[in-house]
Amino acid sequence: MKINTILFLMVFGFLNIANASVDGKWRGWAYWKYDSDGPKCIAHMIFKETTENFSMIMGDLDCDFVAMQIPERHFVKENGKLLLDGEPVGQFTANTFAWSERYNERTVINVSIKVNGTNLDYVEHWIQDDEKLLYDISGRLFKD
Image 1 (tube, rainbow, N blue to C red):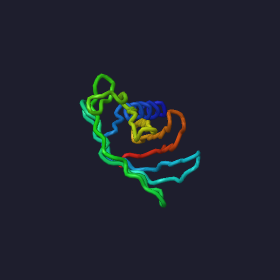
Image 2: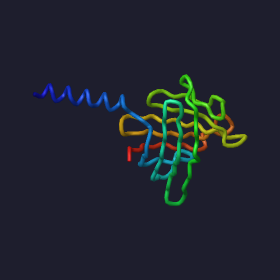
Image 3: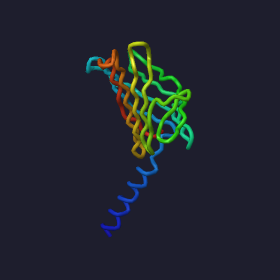
């Protein structure tokens, strides 16, 4: 009886990971660090994914004294690449998304998302002058 239970849990766990989808509402927390220190923030995000597209519909971080609204983004999915306005800016797999975008002349934002069942790991690195880590935003969100 114990072996059947263990097998069921293993199969269910693998199915849960295999069916990992970024699509939907997510709620959790993220740390917004500057110079390796920063507050724990409440995070909300909404994603939409189809076979042809991936979109971040909404995102926000509320850190008591500071807040950030993450702008809406719409990507086309093509052969493992994410395209923004027809230009490749990142890549994707069944449960990961990663892209880079320019914030201004000196700053690039690198974003990565990994979905593992009902957990989503979000990382956003703001890199200034091609080397200095300006902001490190990372957190875990859960399917809402």
